[in-house]
Length: 371
Figure 1 (tube, one colour):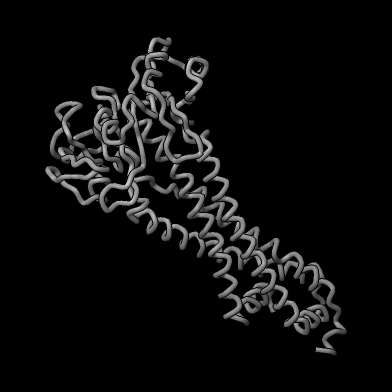
Figure 2 (cartoon, rainbow, N blue to C red):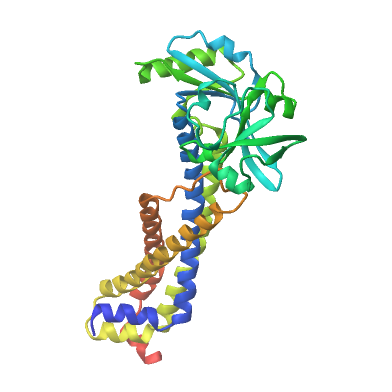
């Protein structure tokens, strides 16, 4: 009887138990893929939005909330003269309930600022001026809100008109309702308040110049913080909280999988004691018995990981299509995350099999007489 035959037979002998164990591992790995993918997608989507707008530095007060805390618009005047700053653009952004959509990004932008330049019209037109009660919708936002050019749109108590559908070249931009800054300030009652200043560098600004500029802004503006755009969300408290919660929840689910595999392998060892005794009597070394148990548990981990990755990817795609998330972020499910998830599953299998493998090595051939 070959080693592979014994391994396979040990797994398929109790098909129901093996199936339930695979399900336990796969749910844990699916949680890793889904939660970590969404967390990474939040950072990636935000960074892509900054790049699409041509923003090099973001000045904001990103606390523990999903959107920055507002501050006085005069902050821009205190930093606009600094070296290496080619242009600034003030914004007021918020996550709001708009009509039947529970949460969508609403972005009020300084009229004439550079953050309008990346928006490419798909249909309709841009607002005529900062006072026109009009909005343009990113193409994803238009789909989520089920709006087309000419339709009315209710934001808080104000009724506005959709005058254009745009492509912002980034997931966050395409999922936003975009209007002039004064108009959103009037709607929300935040006159003379903003929560983001986008800064664009002069040509030739290097990384050292960027860090120096951020330090100068932080000294001049204690109520906000300047961060290079690509690192803005990564360094925020909310990003750290989301990342920590994603991994801690995932690891808890993986721990459940560890206990499931360990229980299955222990039961297998107990039930197969006579078989193990016979293998020892036929000349199998104890090291070979340990390898047998570890291979079985590792294979359980491998198949559980593959199934979990599939469930996780499908689940994330379905979740990303829901109205509450669609347009806010694009989950980041890369090959590296999938490979790490499968590796975690295999590790779960091996670790779970260590104690059962040790127990199997303590069996003696004479125990077969008592089977």
